Length: 184
Image (spheres, rainbow, N blue to C red):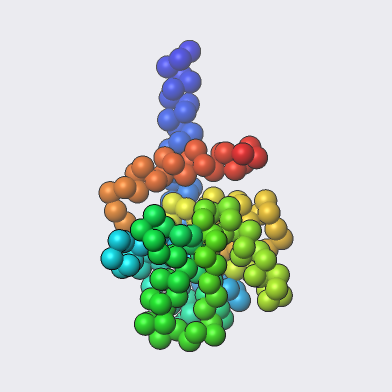
């Protein structure tokens, strides 16, 4: 019986992971008023991690392609002493995004807070849709959080950036997804 339960869990994880990867790597070309870029590591010297740069580059692509009007950068104060949102804005400005098109949330310390703050921004701008920009393995849980917290159409857009730690992240997202689903 234990053997079947274990195989069932492995199968469940495998199917879930395939669906998450498919969802995260799909981009149907949706348009929205706002792209929200979820924060990530800023190094001790103030430079952005390659993962965060890839997210921001994806948001630049969305903006330049006319798929969004504004970019909301969301993150917290990292242990390195930098506000992620401010550093992300600096990066976007250096890429030619107009200052008036960049919104900063320096209190998006985690995915849930970023979703809450994005809903407030979208409401204040009278927007009905957003595009969430993060790594492919994160998109499905972000969409679930938006669905649970608000009435907003949410698409995902992930950069084509992959690294060895994605395996761990897929496992973490499996657990986190069902934690959100169960209300934790």
